[in-house]
Amino acid sequence: MKLFETLVVVVLVILGLAFATLSQAAPDVEDRSVAGGDYVVVMPEGVPSDSSLPVLFYYHGYGQSADTVKNNKALLSLASSRGVLLIIPNGLNRSWSNVGAPSEARDEITFTQNILRDVQANWKTQKNHIWATGFSQGGSMVWDVGCYMGSEFSAIFPIAGSFWRPHPATCKSPVNIRHIHGLNDRVVPMNGRAIGANWHQGDVRQGMAIWEDVNGCDVTPVEISLKDMDCKVWSKCRSGKALELCLHKGGHSVKTEWIADGIDWAESL
Image 1 (tube, helix red, strand yellow):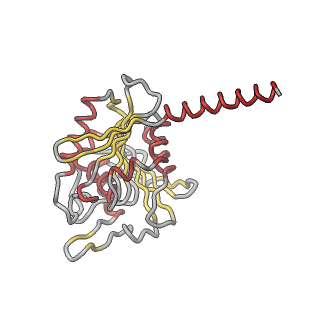
Image 2 (tube, one colour):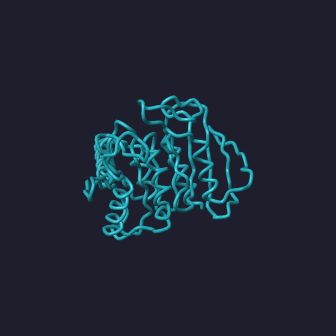
Image 3 (cartoon, one colour):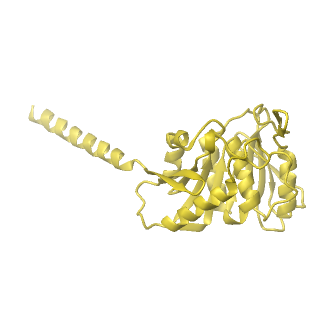
C-alpha cells in the first residue's frame, strides 16, 4: 500500500511539473500600435529578454486579422521553437492596401517601416535575419515589401500572392525571394484574375521575370524536386541574391512546414 501511495505521489509531482512547464512555455504575446495601425509581437519562449533575435513578419490573408494569426498555435510554436521574434501586422478592415489593389486606405510600406522601427527600438534584433512571409493577399504584401523596401529585409518567402497589375517596372533593390504557389490555385491563379471592373491580380511568372531582372539573374535556373513541389532556382545572379519559384499541384493553401522550410532557406543564405 505504501508503495502504491508513493507511486501516486511521484506521478502527481511529475504531472505538476509538466503542467508548470507548459504554463511557462506559453509565448509572450503583446499588442502594439504605431503610426498607421497596430500589430502583434510574439516573443519566443525561454529566450532571455536581452537576446538578439531573428525577426519574421507574417502578413495575414484577406478576411483575417492579426488576432486570427495569433491564435494559430502551429505558427506561434514554429516561431518560438526557432527562437524567432514573430511580428504580425494588422490589416485595415481585414484587408491590405496593396499597390494596385482596390483599397487605398493606408500606405502599407510606410506602415511596415513604422513597425520595423518600433521593433528595432524595443528589441535586440539580428540585422541580417529580418524576414517576411505571408499568405494570399498577405503574400502580395510581401512582394510589395520586397519591391519597395527590400533592402531592409534579408529574405522574403511569400505564399500564394504576388504583385497586382500594373506590375512595377522595376524594384528598388535586389532581394532574396522564395515564392510558393499552387498550379491549381483558383483564388490567386498563376496568371492572376480580375477583381471587379477596375483591378486585376498580377501574373506570377511576369512578376518573377521582374525579380530576375532586378537580381541580375540572366542564366537558366536549375530545376529541383522537393517533397511536394518543384522549384526553379536561380543561384548565380549578379546581385548575389537567391531567387526561387516553387510550384505545387494543389490549390490556394499554406502549410506551416512551408514557412519552416522558408526559415531554413533564409538561414542558409
